[in-house]
Image (cartoon, rainbow, N blue to C red; front, side, top):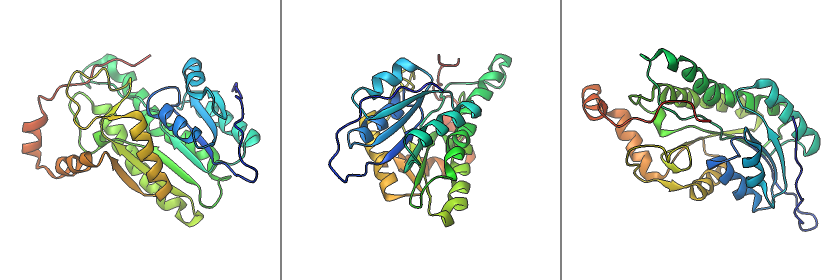
Length: 266
């Protein structure tokens, strides 16, 4: 994988900056997380599909860039190998890449979209984490970005809801697998974050957060090594209410809910 080393920040003598590897860093929450950690002097490995987006994110930061798609296990292994060789074992790995798009099972043309969403949002986590686990130090953190959308199935968003439900359960299993190693697995389930992914939504988005505010909350959850966090806190109550609604009432409230546009994002 091609890498683009950028200018290294000057750090105080004896200072040992965090080493942080982030996917989905060419835009949205991944880019906000890169800037959040970069502002602290962290040494970054940033993965994204769009090189121009990665360059914009990394401007002025101590970062190495890897153009890769998290659905491609070989590309992610190559990016991880390069980061391990050039920077070292990461203290934090954040899997922030994902696809959010509307889907309909009845539409034959949406079958490959279902696959793309599941590959990115579920297998993308595996491809991001697996290459680093053997090398990660005691006290390291793996953070996966799930979603409140995984609490219940949303009409017109079957692929996304299913992928995020699967991501949450996968991350829970991984948390238990790695507990004895001293590696924390942190699951963050955001509500609406103001990013290009959500700006196409043709409906109201309550409690929408800015990407920098969301990044700060994700970083706090990582620092606290919290197993599961919903952000913002208001959406945690919404998620609880949705989870425990009886099916007839849930169906009545959500059957005609507005739907996200279909079609894979470019």
